[in-house]
Image (tube, rainbow, N blue to C red; front, side, top):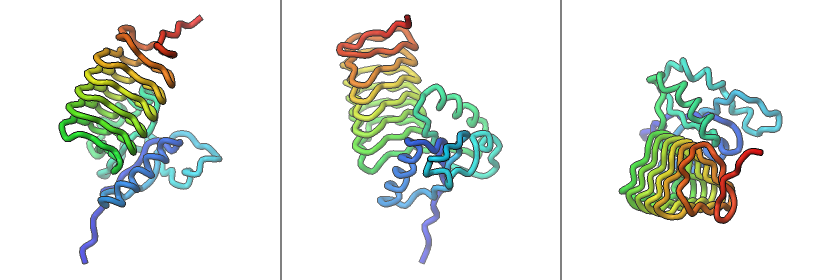
Length: 218
């Protein structure tokens, strides 16, 4: 009887989302055995973290990793995720697979970049373009013809209406909504429950409320 050869995979970040991604990998394997999870790479040690026994090294250990390995970065903060991934891109032994939960619904007409994570019950409809290393968390809904820039994070139950453009390194909060045909600048943060009704033209600001308004530091 031939054994199925599984591809080794490691997760960067042993925090809450990292553990959820490990569970996502297990869910993929239940449907289609694909991955052999070998552990977490994490620079921080938390005595209360139940994943500690699975931490096998720090991010710096991956820079010179000399064997083939699939890696997924489960750091929710976009700017930190981008910084980590860019340190690793020169290592040709590392690959960044796309992870989709079996319960996610993603149209075949979508284009999804390397390193993306799409969680359970997310719905990504037709002709959506998703950049590299985007996180789409549980129960998110992405409408038709949306473009999402690289390293952006959609937190649980975020709704992105059709024909919307999201820049890179954005954070779209839990239960927030972005109305159709809007353009959202790079590094925009949308607070939980906010509803964005107008274009966001200035990068690196936070928007909260209904309708969403820019927070200006005092």
